[in-house]
Image (cartoon, rainbow, N blue to C red; front, side, top):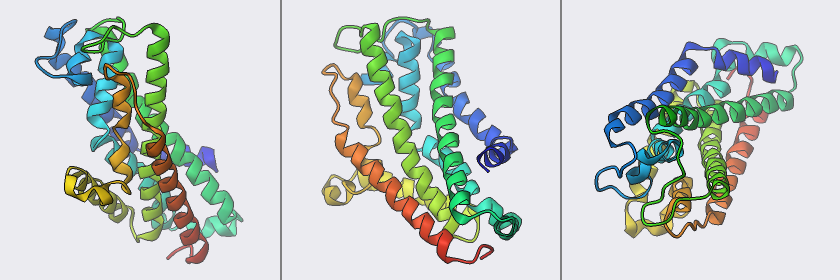
Length: 265
């Protein structure tokens, strides 16, 4: 079931276009700043200011740029499709007759969801890394206002940031998955997730609504960027708890929908 689900989703033109769009952003941004290779990116600070210094700098800056809006929407697209495609195609009832248990079907779909989300996340980092190597070269990770990172420090922080980003994208993917099972069509689920991401992003900028912000998974998505501040510290514990809680709640909602409703409804 997992293999079939992955082949079905990853070989669709829509999925390939999504991955191509994600890869295009780091490549195009890399070429746009090619003339500043080895120097600070204007007067910008943080990851964006240090982007032209090395391939890894560019890869992490690309992730910081894409993660707040474009990546979650691109992740939600296949997630909603994984949840709703069998029902829309009219094959879900036949899967149960096969017989395929609802538990097995859900496990296969959640497994495919995790793999597709990981592929989308790694597509951004891989494209940023390859474009960075070609344009800026392979140099030590540069932090504005601090010494360059050693190889071990770079590996630790990049792997920590990548794992955290993946967890954040899994949270929005499971929300899209649950919406895809709940709503009649996948496009409606995608629209609901896009509205949620945009609305949460707006609320996250309103400092007077701190009580609302702390319960939104979006509020913690960019906490990993502090790993690359001059202080080199980031408090990711609360963000991890928030993402795990979101994944758990969305998965439980998906289970309830799949167990209680008619397969073809």
